Image (cartoon, rainbow over all chains, first blue to last red; front, side, top):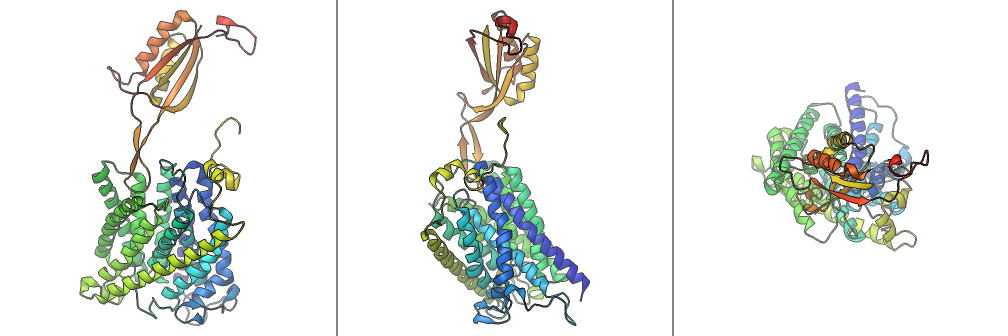
Length: 408
Length: 117
């Protein structure tokens, strides 16, 4: 039992937990005020539902002791977390339940990320069911592929994904396009974000939480954790600055929402690389995410798809860039394998095909889940036209974000 | 009796209300409103990227007061001089509308006409 490792992993778990409320406010600030409570609730209740799913069967499917389908998904060995020791055995640094706790926070934020694609029009009850199915059929298998002994991670192709660029970001980004396509465009997308300070505050909370997300993914309080936290900071800060400057050159102004998005794009991109690159690699990754994601947002706005809060452009494209960049900037002394900068092309190739595999799986299965939910009588993906016009806060929750007239 | 409705820039509201009091206005109501005149609205970012859109309305303040016709010139002059944001005046500084009022009643006492102003 190592109290240093234990203390850090408990702290890191709490930091990752805090990202989901941060995301709630980040997304909340971007929508219109009549659906602000709903947008926050989409993330907030994810905490409730996914925790239950993770406890009952989610963890077991991702990290079970055996495999129902080899290299694909875990089994039911830890249903209800029964069978996992409460106490650390001789020689074990941390009590095994820490892994359940830490990974639970990742499982929570991933479906919450997807909600940005369908805000202001999605039916809340259907969302609850979607979350249960998505964590079971998409998140748990993909987590297994990368970290649970599946075909992508160390026991398979050997792709580098330190903190979940594939499992969380590419996965959520691909699901976001499937959701945006099936739920359709908003009838009236509105003009501008309702609360830019919420967006910046939410982004700051995400950034803060990301120190646990990446810094904790060494699963120990060690040198890798120190390096991970440093490169996280460098990439996020670089990406935010680059995004601001690109905006300045193309529009003449630096948007607060833009800089917040730039920071998130940098955090996404460094996620898989945080255990593989040094400070200079992090600078390059942040520079790349600031440029690539900015133009990805611009490009996707030209399509007919209404990914309302640009989940795919930031998390999907940012995740793909980070995944490939990990293969480019990996340093053997940190990652254990050579990246392109050290003359090896093989890692880049591994990164690309595993990322594409995740993208395709997540898109297809998410599409099928939502397609089926849309056809079930009484469910359906979309709220009525009058609810959408009225705003989801009153229609779905019977609440309003702020009440400032005399009738209160 | 006349009613004066003045639409001004929000940042001038304290100065204008002070000037109106000095010019003899005994009361006023104001509200924060949105709108535009001959000026075009304002360009805003629509979301996370660099896309912008024109927001057709700007924040304005609407001040309403009722006063005796004899004070009209003095009150109007006070509003104009305090609402202008520069010596020559700027686009968006505002507009003043004047209308006749047929009756004023004070709720507390039931007084009417100029006594009730």
